[in-house]
Structures are given as structure tokens and as C-alpha cells.
Length: 373
Ligand code: SF4
Image (cartoon, rainbow, N blue to C red):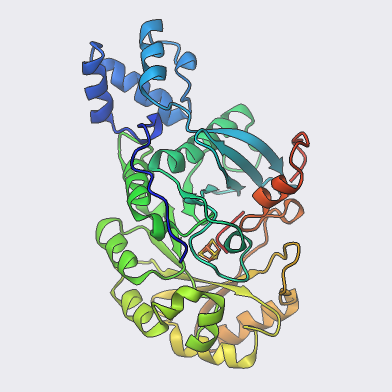
């Protein structure tokens, strides 16, 4: 695991403050308490620029801008796929770039957020893993992605037939969320807070490569949906594809998943990127059948999105379907994830990498995105 740099000394951001913290700030600034509710309402709608908070006095707008980092990130590039998927590249106010994706569907709209710039882990098939790890995001920077996407949805509504409100949040962008546990927990608090974004825990998913102690702590504190980047069901292969398996092998992961607090009608998702000739063989079906608990878990087969220089090939679609059927025949719920945003390189770290390669080119709305495979 690459070392993480501390982020403790960063100034507070508007997106991360709770209503009581906003009330305390108003008291410090000599403002009446109701101003906190007004700021909170704007912020929850995605408006973080005090100058756009029209019902606030000018002096308070100035004071907010002085006391807080109101907008911890700004949009650097936005691309829209033919299927409506929107991919965003954000520049952090303190330097560094992160990506987020909006995945619109008829019944829901999901934002996929990043938790680190780069990733502390080194999964060799993952484009983010091949990039340098730069920093952990703060809670405010994670939440700011959600708010920026809400703002974008308000400015440019999704096409007719697609859900108009942001409904789901998934931590599947750049980075290993549970290697940035403190900030991710703090961001979950704000997402779940009835005075914050008020998103049900059933609509939030945290995806991890399998950091066992952190999974246990997440389940104890925030029993949201859990997704595991499994990608292999034997230690020999998973040691190669998901190196954190060398620290937390499958037996430890198995125990941890058995202890995960599943609600009724819920399941843990086991993500499985299909690599031709590597983890898509008959013996891999057999290994999955030994590992998976069909009453608690579902396997989600994901098409590998190749990136420049990748030494891997994705399994052909027909083979993925046959692999899914072989799992179903063994009593395992298996789905092949519908690929979104293919035309805009919608996979882990690809937007950021593309932007670096094209540094200086103007962004266009019709260019290009998604992440944590
Ligand atoms: S798959 Fe996830 S944990 Fe592994 S390197 Fe990529 S972003 Fe990090």
C-alpha cells in the first residue's frame, strides 16, 4: 500500500459542516440562528458560492467566503456520453484532480464519487492503480462532488424519461474508500443526516477491495450497501489481481462478509471484472461457487475497459453471458453489468489520465466517463 499524506490541517469546507456547526458559526459571526438554516438549504441544493445565496446579507456572504473553503473543487471538464452518462473532472482548490460520474436511469440517478487522488492500492488491471497516489480527499471534497453534480443536474436537467433527482451515491470512483476511512465516515454522516443530504442508507454503496477491519467498522457504524472488488476467488489469483489479498486473504474476507449486518431483502455485491484467459475460466466458476454465499451475495460481472498500454483484454460479451449462466446454474445470483459511457472511457482513472494527455485542450460538452472497477 502506498503511504497516505495527512490532510488534517486543511481549513473547514462548507459542504462538510453539519447544521449545528453552521449554527455555531453564525453565533460566532453575530448572526441570528435562522441564517444557518438558510445556508444549509442552499448548500443542500448544491449552491456553495455565498454570492449566489440571494437571501443572505452581503456582510455574511463575505464572512462565509473568508472563513470557509466554500467550493473545495471546480469543474475542469465535463463530458456527456451518448447514453446520458456524465463524467466530470474536478480540480481541487488545494491542487489535484478527481473524477465523478452521473449515471442516469429511468428510476434513479446515481453519482459515483472518488475518495482519493490516485489510489493507495496497486490492483494491476486498474488504471487508477497505475497512477501515482497523491492524497486522501477530505469529507468536504467528497461531498462537494455530490453537490456539484446536483448543481449540474439543476442547470441542465436530464433528458425526458430519466429520473430528475439525484437518488443514489456510490463510492466507486478513484481510490480505496476504506483507506481514507475518517473522511469517508464523515462524508457518510452528512449524506445520511436528515438536515444534510438526507439520503437513505439503502441508497448508498461503499465499494472496497477488501480491507477487513475497516469493513467491520463500516458495518458497525454505517450499515450502507457494501460492494467488494473480488475479481478472483482463489488466493493465488487474487494475490495477483487485488494485492491487498496478501494482507487480508479470502478466508478473512469470508468471515468478515458473514458478519456484515445485512438488512432484509439486501445483499452484498461481489464485483468481478472479467479478464480474458485470466479469471474467466471454468475453474473460476468453480472457485466462485465455493466462495459465494448465494443467500447473502450477488456477483456482478463487469466488462474490462481497456486503457492505453493495458496488458489485459476483456472477456468477450458472449463469454461473460455464458460465465453468468454457469454461475446461475450453480444457484448464484449473477448479472452482467450494463456498460455505461463506453464512448467516453468510463472506467477507473480514465478521465483524469485522458485530461493529462490532452492538457491545455479546451473541454467540450460532447467529449467524453466511471470508476473503482
Ligand atoms: S481497483 Fe480500486 S482499490 Fe484497486 S487500484 Fe483501482 S481504485 Fe484502487
